[in-house]
Length: 333
Image (cartoon, rainbow, N blue to C red; front, side, top):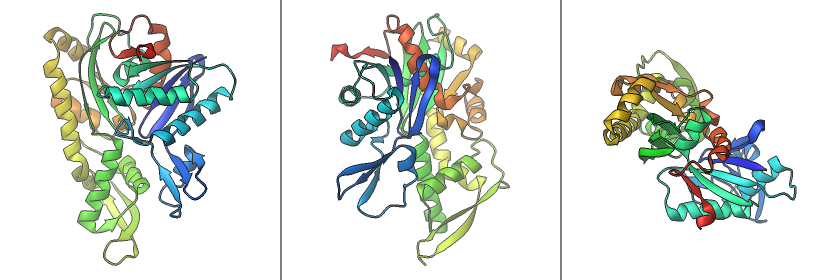
């Protein structure tokens, strides 16, 4: 039994060979401090965000692509693995996706969590490589393929050729930071406090980082910071643009940095092939047009970008003997 796991800051996705994606749930755990028990994991825990009494904590065990709460993360992975394997005796081989900037200490924490969840053998694969495999790109040829993987905690930008990473960088410009920027903007400009879910819904509905007009609007609800009373507010796409345009500039800079480090021959390939985007953040309104304008290279989202990395992790079992860079056999630990 072979399992590919995209251990994301926002969501955990698990794929299994020909079955494809078998699990896609938020990386959230609900914990009862009084009884010291885990109440819910995944979708059920996510529904409790911002709605629990003091003695129940809704925890995200991953922060900015790294494990921030080891025990909760271990419990979460074990629960998800048991759901897809049916608690059978056969221990699976597992490929875990990691950000390209992860440290050795963080890598070992991921490995330990997978081992505690019952993995027989563990491999680590960097997310940009997995995303390209999941999109069906042949990375064995001496051709440059550029990928921007925008997740919940980190954004990885990389150029891959002949099964190896040629140039890469990782920035913390990702979905969760965009939500936090919207919350900060609304509180400072309108003196209204909104929650994470409200900010995320506003992002999905209004985000346009290329040509906002101010005409697209939606109503949100929050609490007035001075009066302490519930209020309604009409936000426009221009508000969201002002809240997050600094972050999109950071992403453009990261893409340019990687292109500057890439050999000229591969840059020519990238100009021909275009730049592919994966991850939930790639669906941000107008982002593909903005990057196309800033780089002069066509930028496009992968087919089904949300599940790209998880599908690539499962696909990577075919490449275990070929992928040398960006793919780690954990037996070295």
